[in-house]
Structures are given as structure tokens and as C-alpha cells.
Length: 270
Image (tube, rainbow, N blue to C red; front, side, top):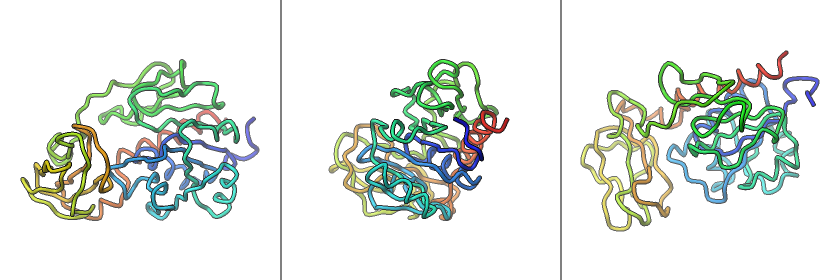
């Protein structure tokens, strides 16, 4: 049922990583305050300073002035809303959707495939990126591939397939991404915001070193002592060298969030 006021829409977000956070933040700033996010029990993010899923580990996190808070049960979501927080709960099976009957469900897991989202979860179901087909398993899809179509709201059909190529920053793509050289436990003496140089060892997976391929700022890095798979993305170096960017939502996440806002207004502002 459509609420009397747009601001009363209940919005469920699957995932609380970087793209999900940019989306929830943009909606929150647009005065949609009844947002809740669902995560797995041990979420892993590279850009941890701008990922609400870190609340699962630390209890809460503030991203650009908006606080996300871990809640244990769906019953605690209302209290978080009253405190002007975005609640994040461990709910890998999305049981809170059945309990709260949201008006909007956003699959922002960015799994590059559909993990079970369907048209019947809410009056408006939105998928971010590859793996969804508008009109089939979701009502609308948001294009997440960089380029002229980034942020396009797709009403019929699929977005562009995953290219596997990291976004271009100052001419660097693959070089700026840190990947695990093998399977094992990642550990590092460096933190997000530290400056690194090409060929510098930024950490280890077990005893195998992880080296920077370019100079820059360590803009993102997974938590220390995390079990990783071979070739998993574990860090992100920003060649622009501005440490402030570490705590700022990316232009891509802002664009995607704005497009989700467009999709919601397309459905409900009639």
C-alpha cells in the first residue's frame, strides 16, 4: 500500500557495502528515514570508511555525517529510526523483509548475479548492476558500469555485463587494485589513509607479500586477519594522493544512489 507521504516509505537494502552505502546515504539525505539494511554475519569491505557494513563489526559507523547502527532483531529497527540512525542487521536470508513488508527492496549486494531477489518482495524491487533483468526478476535495474550509461534506470532488459576491469583513476585500472597473491590470512601494518610507494610491501597473505604497483594513498583495505581467497580484491590505492577521499563516498556510488532515488520517485511520486 502506498503511504500517505513519500517520506514514510519503508526501504529495505540487501547488502551494506560501498554501493549499498552510497545508495542508503543518498536516500537518507533525501529525507527517506525508514531505511534498513541486511548483511551477512562477517561482511568484508575494501572501502571500509564508507561502508555501513562495518557497523556489524564495530557496532556503528558514521559515513559523511550519517550513522548506521547494528541491531540484533527486526524489533529494534523502529528504535534506530527514532534515533535518526540507519539500522543494519545480520540477516542473510532477508527475513526482515517478510516481517516489515517494505515498499521498496533494493538488491545492492553487487554479487554480479541474482542470489534470490524476486518481483514479489515489494511493490518496487530494484537491482544494482549485472545479474538482474528488469521486468523479470526485478522491476527496475540500475546500470553500474562506468561510462555514459552509468546510473541509467532500466525498465526493460539487462544492464551491461561485468567487464572485470576496475574503474579508471588517473589513468590506472588494474594497477591500483591490490589482490591476494594466494589463499590465506591477510595481515598488514598499514591502515587506510597511509601513503604507499610502488613496489612497497603493504601486507602479507600468510607469508606471501602483497606489493603496491603504483604510488598513492591506501584508500581502502580489508580488515586485518581476514581469511582470503586467491586473487580476491583486498585493497585499493588512489594515485591522486588525497587522503580526504578515503572517507568520502565515490562519484560512482553517489550516481547509483541518485538513480535509485529516481527509480523510487518514478514509482511513487505519481
